[in-house]
Length: 137
Image (cartoon, rainbow, N blue to C red; front, side):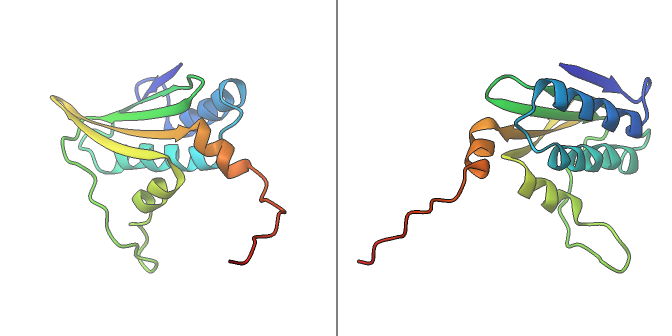
């Protein structure tokens, strides 16, 4: 398990630690996808909370990769339409597309956002396309 928080690491160090963790413990996952989501969640914790504090927790049991980012805001993320001219608004939708599940849990002192990548889904995504032609009905 990897656990880092903003009192010991900045977001760049957290991404580097996450990359090393993925390589060592969870090689089946698409590391680029995971690091993009980690960057988005950490960035949101810094940008959308009063104190900018966060905690990153990653675990990779055999069936899934679980990434959780905790912050001190009790406000759920609000998906919004992306704004290509002024930037922003794309991250939540991208995170939803890249993960098997994305959930928010409110806690007494903030919230956690949990992103999960299923090993079974990754195996399906990596399976080669069938070369058997479809039979006409």
